[in-house]
Image 1 (tube, helix red, strand yellow):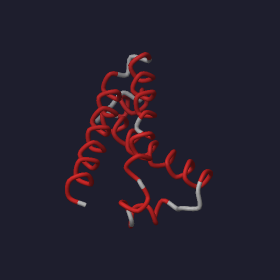
Image 2 (cartoon, helix red, strand yellow):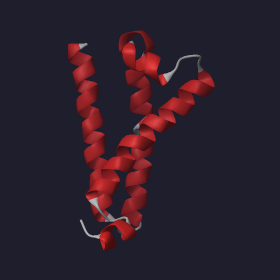
Image 3 (cartoon, one colour):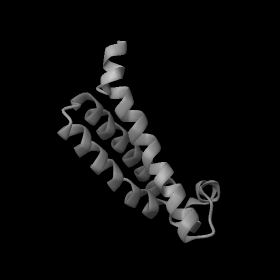
Image 4 (tube, helix red, strand yellow):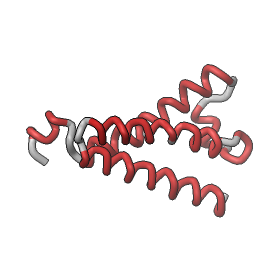
Length: 99
């Protein structure tokens, strides 16, 4: 990873970090605004709260980030966002079948 790639925001790691952080941050703000639950409580009690539905909704934000990187010709960062979305998909499947 060279410094010029980081300066251009065209690296897979940048896309993964943004794709992992932005949905969780959005979910935190949505939950704090619309309910009395905190993000920590929902992570500790996933079946009580419906965290999976909140997470699915927040992953649409990754779709917007993906298209933003795609339109800006930052293809490697767009791939990182897709990878982060797949990681969230694996987490969702884990919670569906094993929790």
